[in-house]
Image (tube, rainbow, N blue to C red; front, side, top):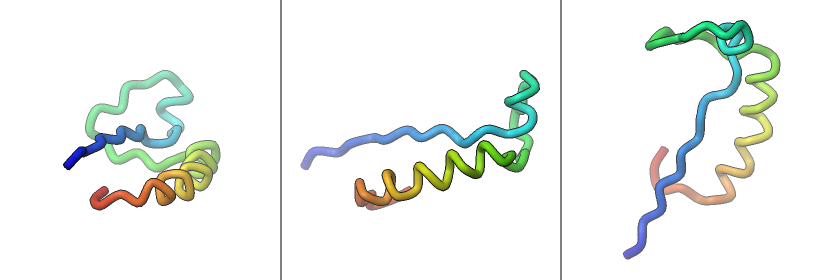
Length: 52
């Protein structure tokens, strides 16, 4: 059985846009980050992952 590992980075946050390091903070996505996630969702779903 062949396994494929897919890495997907989170969308942009206000901290990312300002050049701040986030560490382990759970910073919400900004408008751009939400759009990035919206656009990535069908592409990732099309890969039919067994786990996320």
